[in-house]
Image 1 (cartoon, rainbow, N blue to C red):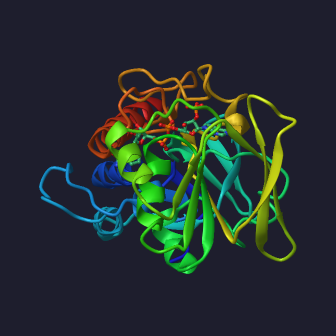
Image 2: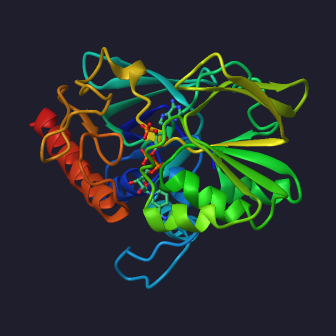
Length: 311
Ligand code: NDP
């Protein structure tokens, strides 16, 4: 359903737990509310099984987010799919420009777009993204049955991917830039015991090679960069953590040294009428239920701000 208008009381950027909870709370306060997002659910839809959201013993991230969205829609929240690229402060409120060229204005705005996959930023990564370069083993793993793949990273995400892919792929390389792994030792032990897994520590990827799809990667030893090698493979899974993508907001709101949006206890940023909630903020605990609560709080703060304007 495309948005019915261009002006809203409240515009929410992001449709994960924080954004959708805020939408539900805002709609129940009769604020006309638009959610702008690339897709519903954010990174949550990659979560195979959620076992810590109260009320559900277990539910997939996708199903949980569908329930959030259904509830928001039932309350009249509207959705626009696209990427917000610019937020401009107006005399009253904010104007949001999307990658499609569409513009929407809102009396208050909530930044709730979560985290993005960290990228290696090496040659070939962008060009071959979706053509052998992937950031999601759960989503794309089955495409690499009986093929040779590499997983990059040394945290739980990387090890999770290795353990999953080892059951599908012919061979899995795990390439990590140091010899210190952040992953739980039990996961590492299980990976080391697998015949089709080869773990290479102190290994950096310099380039991803391929014409129309990935055909290999160029690697080097981080202790001795002269030691170089090229590995033939068909898939590369980049599992090196997450980061807030907030550079585009640096002139609007206060950010901390790692790019998270600084919020007070009620979700207010440094700019009145501009709120933030969830994993893109400086909240320490990045958890679904915490993001949902922060979204609800931010919506109530937006309501308070908007009603203070008409008094
Ligand atoms: P982490 O931040 O834990 O690990 C990121 C890994 O990627 C590190 O080994 C880091 O290396 C490496 N890395 C970062 N940047 C680069 C780069 N530019 N080039 C090469 N390597 C790089 O992220 P995860 O995604 O693994 O985990 C995030 C959170 O999610 C953690 O709290 C984790 O425990 C949790 N999680 C839990 C799971 C589970 O319990 N099953 C599954 C998945 C995630 P270095 O150490 O050198 O910095």
